[in-house]
Image (cartoon, rainbow, N blue to C red; front, side, top):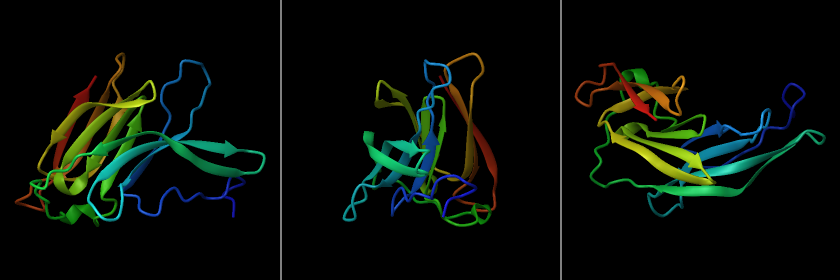
Length: 176
């Protein structure tokens, strides 16, 4: 069934940990490059996680969409020493396991239960890791926005301390 006269819903993955639609800045005015960033396990037998960026092809005549081959993919390293933090009361569940946010050419990956934040910049069809932080706090929610006048973003996160799952804290990160 199409939605509101648009395309039929498309399953992007059977095992998504987090995902975001991506529309990087384009040099040509009015250009729209549809992409989807998908955080998912690399395979079923180990704990490796990847961030993969796929082009999305939209055929308006047939009202269909397809996720095309991977444009770029990076492995997200996880340490066996990373302490999992108990889910706080305000998290309202453990899903999604990862938050994926995009703004301009930046893609932010947040592994919620270990407080791991990775910020990538999509440049020349590559994902460059430009910032990485381990907060050691459960990340309940997050949002990002462009920093006015510069090529950068501001991320704001709602977190809680590992020792007190009812404790709410706000943290910001600036990347340029």
